Length: 315
Image 1: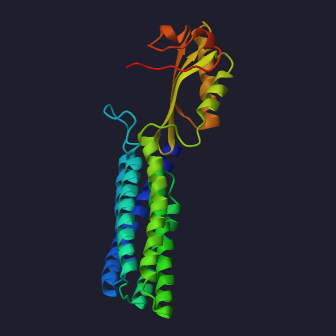
Image 2: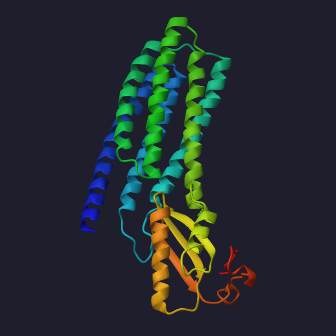
Image 3: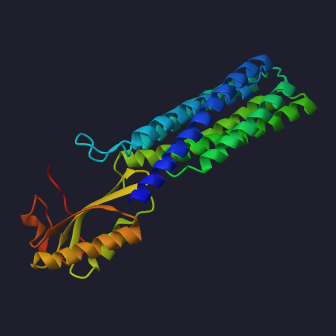
């Protein structure tokens, strides 16, 4: 346990250092890109400045979330702050969607009335962005173990690709003189931002709404639990995520009227199954020796006691 705690502490320290470096580099690049975008009259560069500004916010939220996630559970927050990173990722993705919509609207306006841009300045600033964003994305990849840091990594990886597209666009404008390339690129950048952000919003919203985690088959888990020796029926089954890498389960299990020492063996078998086969480590399993109709407001027809059943709690 001490070794695991030491490794976890070292990992969090490394993550904090990576985020600090990323924050400083991103803020510097936002300022450079914004000023260059104004001077070059490039919406693509201004879009990149906006994208990187939202990434700065994303990294700042991620940094804050890493701090809160390291805090232990207490009497007020018995699960600790495991969802701090999930909330940060949700807010990050939401701000990115707003930025993407703004870029898309401006790009449509510029397609209707193209503005002359300075392609050489576009290309120079974008080249610096590719190097910076690529380096940050590589650093984040090494520590991206939950949805919070994965969202930050996706932002920086997306920035690397979109900034590379700005270089290509600048070259295209330089060769052809077609200024419509700049807003067209902006639309592509906006689409890329939306695509990555919507996926994160869906994943984090599912966690915050206590949805069944992605990749979890409730029917399969119930069936395998019911195949465990000594188990008659599993009902009132709930599985949710505490954080992006932590799952919890609560259910009622009907077993024969047996001594507590024997029921403890059944509990060990169920926990082993859930831990080893489904990566569920936090479980609350309530044993019952009678029909659920007599326990805690549940309703289970007696003829279904040996099959799947539905059960509702009334609090």
